[in-house]
Amino acid sequence: MSPDSSPLARPNYDVLAIREDFPILAREVFGKPLVYLDTGASAQKPRQVIRTMTEVMEETYSNVHRGVHFLSQTCTDQFEAARKTVARFIAARKADEIVWTRGATEACNLIAATWGRANVGPGDRIVISTLEHHSNIVPWQLLRDETGAELAVIPVDDVGEVDLDAYADLLDERTKLVSVTHISNSIGSVLPIREMARMAHEKGALIMVDGCQAAPHMPVDVQDLDVDFYCFSGHKTYGPTGIGALWGRKELLDAMPPYQGGGEMIAHVTFEKSSFKPAPHKFEAGTPAIVEAVGLGAALDYIESIGREAILAHETEVAEYARERLATVPGLGIVGQARERGAIVSFTMEQAHPHDIGTIVDRAGVAVRAGHHCAFPVMERFDVSATARASFGLYNMKSEVDRLVEALDEVAGIFGR
Amino acid sequence: MGVPLQARPAPTETMADAQRSIVDSFRYLEDWTERYQYIIELGRRLPPFPETKRIEANRMHGCQAGVWLVSDYRDGKLFFEATSDSAIVAGLISLLLKVYSGRRPDEILATTPAFIEEIGLAEHLSPHRANGLALMLARIQADSSGYQAGEVA
Image 1 (tube, rainbow over the protein chains, first blue to last red):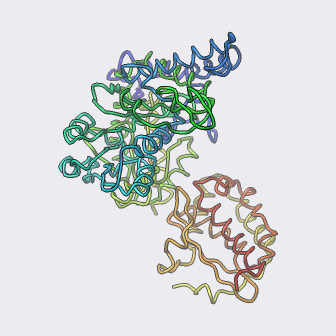
Image 2 (cartoon, one colour; image 1 turned 60 degrees about the vertical axis):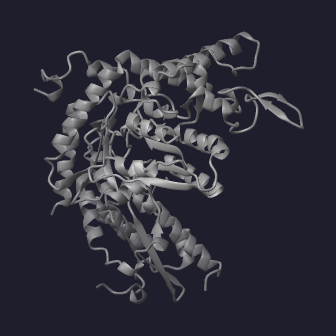
Image 3 (cartoon, chains in turn red, orange; image 1 turned 180 degrees about the vertical axis):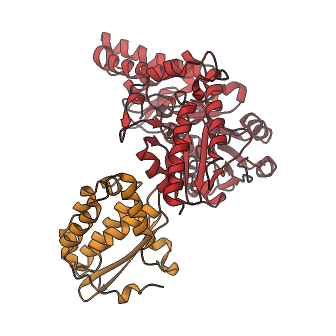
């Protein structure tokens, strides 16, 4: 019996039917059925997203917020409906708390450039964690260098959990912002965001959360988490590239200066002075990624049609099965064993460099990520130059874990002499 | 220890012959497993890279495997030695050096590594950001331009 048809598999989660929604999963690589285990880098797209984007371009496309003509109105309605979908997806109070960005990277840069410049000065402190993606490190370094603020880093322990005692020590009246990931993209740790938000607020600091790996994986309720800013990328959420969302509490967004200048974000312009539209539009200069925004809305609808509790349960089952099976591969060591973890498994092998692991398993049709995962400090913390990473999405199956393990056995055979 | 870079002799075969003999040596390796096993073996036989040269300044910053490269210019020829923490990349380095090390800058600049395509491993040289090997080839070519233009004594 294949593991996917075991009686223990979730009865209501029809992974084979879900896979039918993703045309790319039917293809072969090097003559083998594709096993796509790189959803953490970018998720594949369901027909529902592809169809929606095609329909917009074929039937309703126009620029938004400008024309009086029929198409402009129609397209603006779709574009703003997608914003409402994002708001509902993360339980924001209002759609105008959602700012479209190019992705989470731009969201971090936007907060650093607007809220940061307005609120951070010499001697102030910004706190991040060791587990951050470079996109949640470098914008704060730039802000630090510009303002004379301090950038402090929460350490992690040997299993990859943030040290909350050390975190508490970093929080004081000088701390202006905490910016942390919800789930580590490199080793899968889930951070205790609600607790970290409470601790930050007690000291008067705000908290921003990079939700790239969490938004596609688990229910996210920004009000329940009680955070101040939250962002995620469309392409990791089964939507298109070039679009992402930043949520901020309305009063914070209203008080922030604009981001880039240009069309779309202004109320009135003379050569002496311009006045700006209210949030979110003041952060959205220029023609936005219209088709992509509507596509992201379709992706979130798709996720909700399956249900995030169900996705979480399924992905957890597959990822935990992977952790079990990988542990049986000779010479393999898993990096990151946090108690709370997402559907991401990072590993190294004694016999082979991660690049070589990735190269060999690719020939078996298995796509994994190999490298530093844009998280040099994590690699340094765990004393590795790189890892191989399998990351699971809502369409992955236990039988694909078996394919990975077979391919890794082959790696062990080729290198382990 | 192997022979230091400064004492390595120039190759006797031409660059074109070196490429041809690489393609020949792959001809009888039928499946990809054998090809990679051969490449890994070449990587293991790469002359040891001096630890003192394994420094940031000599590193190609690819996203995946680390690659370190140093050069020596003598008698009008450029000699290279390089290494990688990946066995596969080290093997491919061995092939690239067989073609490119100990050559005149003008020869280097006039030669594209056609063999890599012929042996079916072109993806390893695609100039995307993750690729330390592609960066190494770019550095070999940049060094050659520098010496050819007489910018570097």
